[in-house]
Structure formats: structure tokens, C-alpha cells
Image (cartoon, rainbow, N blue to C red; front, side):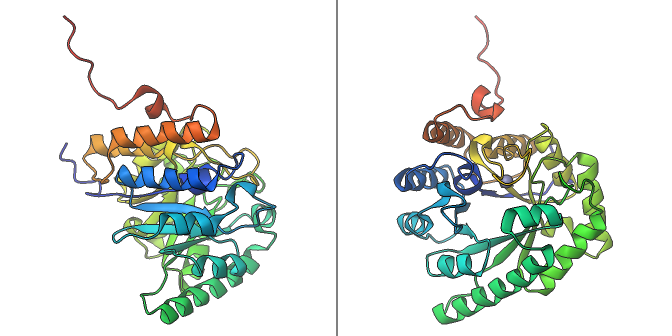
Length: 315
Ligand code: ZN
């Protein structure tokens, strides 16, 4: 395969310990640390490990500081914490994190249900978080703590329906002006299609951006997550959020299905010759581990059927 339309390398951020476990019954801190260690051992270097949210609202994310203390930081890695507000950012920055993710939705109703703020209020909150992250970095003497803004419902909202790609990209532009270092477009409720991926990337290019600078967070609610990832790879997108085992889904979004399974994307990238640095066999082992931790089979088909290899010749 010498098709040069695909990127040479894709960066995959596994959000399984956060997005994957968030809607589940709480998993003990020690097992959440074990999960992160298993991802590391499979070659995953970008991991969204925790969320600093109210343990009353999301019991499965309690103990974020202990999880971070348990996993520590290693060179060449990026351990990420999701923070919904300034309070969460303060707690995260007091712990060992390499990156913050913040979320805002172009869907007003989703945003209100998710964080009880209007989209404009969330934008103002994100600007305050960016300032905190910069100040924390200065105090610590390290480089600035990057802040990735994840735009949820970027491909449509279960409440408002279609959202114009230009409107989504305009929000991304305002967030970049507010100082976020990256923008990730999330298909929170699995409404994206390859056509909608193309439409959004067209809007990114029309606004002067490049698909190579875009991150995508895909959900498999309607079985199109891999097709969407492939459509994005063809356009040069090289940054993806996925969850080992294909678990996940927002507890606040009606109809949210699991994330694109990390092993499904790695299997696709392996076949296309797109480097990920992740060992597929080891990763499938992690998918079975997360299944054990939540007490049920994971939805990922690659975890069920194994890597796409030929059977040994019949005798
Ligand atoms: Zn997700």
C-alpha cells in the first residue's frame, strides 16, 4: 500500500479510562491505574486518564487525583484530565497532568444538560481555564499546559438536529482566539457520516484551517465510526480520540453509544500503513481487561474476532 493520501502517522488518544468508564458502575482506583498501565504497555502514549467532575454527578470519576498520583508522568507521554470548569481545572493543575481537555457544545441544549451553562458561558469559562493553565505552567517553570477544546455535537445534536459546519468551525475559531492549543470535533451521539466528515473538513479549509490540525472524537452509535475515521484519514486528519474496547458514552446525552474502539482504528491504520506505535495484540488484551473491570463483554468487534490475519493453511 503506497497510497500517499493517508497520513504517515496518527496520534491516538485513548479516552477509555475516562469516557469508557464514566457511564459505568465505579471501578476501584487501583484497577483504573492498572488499566492505564496496560495501555502504556501496549504502546499508547496519549491517555485521557481522569475527569475532575463532581463525584455526585459522575460517581465513576471520583478519586481522579489518586489515579493521577498512582500513574505518575513519563517522558514522551501525554496524560490528560478532562475538566468541566475552573474548579476542576484548579484541582487538575494541582495534580500531575500534561494536558487539559475542556468541552463545549455547539448545541445549546446539550451544553446546558452537560455543564449547566450556555455555550457563551462555557466559552468564557474556557478562557479562564486557559489563563489558569498558563499561570500554573509559569509557576511550575515548565512549558504551558496545553488545553484541548473538545466541541461536542459537532456533527449534529439530538436536540437541535443538524448544525451548520460553518457554525461549528466558527466556535473553534473563537476558542483558538481564547488561547486553546488544539480543537477536537466530537461526534458525541454518533450522528456523523463520511459525507458529514467531508463537509466539516471543507468548512475547516474554507476558514483557513488544515485537516492535519484537527482532532476527531468519534462514537459508533450507528456503526459508522470506522467509516468516518477512514474518511478523515483520507483528508489528512491524524489525531483521534478512541476508547479501548469501544466503551463509553455521555451519561447526559440521550442516545449516546460507545466510542470508536481504539483497536478498531489501530487495525485499520495497520492495514493502511499509518503508523500508530500501538501493538494491536497487546491492545486487544487491554480491551478484555476493561471488559473484566466493568463486568461485561465490550462492544468492539476487533476485540471479539481478533486481528485480521489469515488462518493457518488447511492440511
Ligand atoms: Zn466519547
